Length: 382
Image (tube, rainbow, N blue to C red; front, side, top):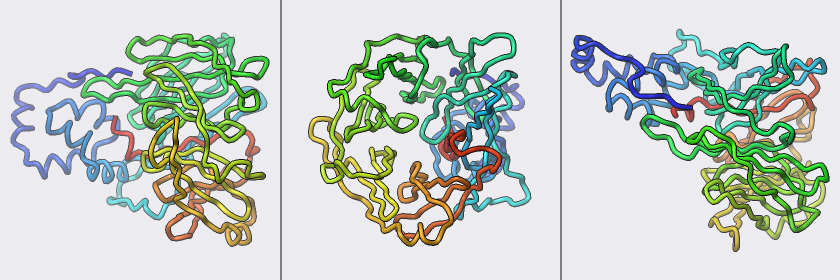
């Protein structure tokens, strides 16, 4: 996706007015601007504005709380083939809006070209970029798009080789310069035999897909990757395998390898496992009905990984006090695990050992038809 400098041209008189405004006045004006205006127009006015919008975390936090709600996109798959995407807000304790008189909007994908069906194929960690495909009434061939929900921008992509039905997608944001956002998309498609993956890589700089060598695992019992989007850390996209390994694909070197999970957690039966990003480090959450542990890759290495247990939590009180079974899905922050049941999302604070419901899920759809993608606007200033 390319957003070029000079999207908005100010006349000389308008430039003089901008220069005469005090920094406090500029701050108050920009803090009230919509995401779309801020990212598509205002940041190109001058370097000071661009620095404030793109680099000031306090400004980003305050602005995002005023303008866009955080929550989750849900992929709702219909038996009629009319797939859709819905957004459900999070009722978080930390969502204290500075200006209660200003309505905080929810992001939607209604800005994409009209289609019979919209499906999210992959997402970045906080939902700043989505890879979607749509299907029309006139042709069975899907159309692929990259989009920014916060600023409502989209760009049509060339289609990958769709004869390979995708099973995993990972998005790697390579560089966010002052004018162009660079990223790569890894598309893995399981082979018909089930032993390995067809591999395609999209590069935003060339705006093209590249077919890479087939990913053939040495251990046949480790061929199945689990989890949704790949976790982008340290130059690679990471997934857990079915049997106690981490699969990592380096998007620059276009090579892959596997390495072991924490030795203490090998062969743990009946546990829910999910790879997560925890404070910029690769993490794995292990969970049963009785306990939950969060392990962090302390010193990144694919040859001699050093894992450290960050949290060990007794889950029996939670499971006894709620009606449904909750499973860890992703980390919302460095100490908060988002857990999902059949009817709602729950935020579990691992430091305080407390939890609260954040999102009620729609009761009209089977949970197997729902795929959540987190969206946190304070991380969308790309």
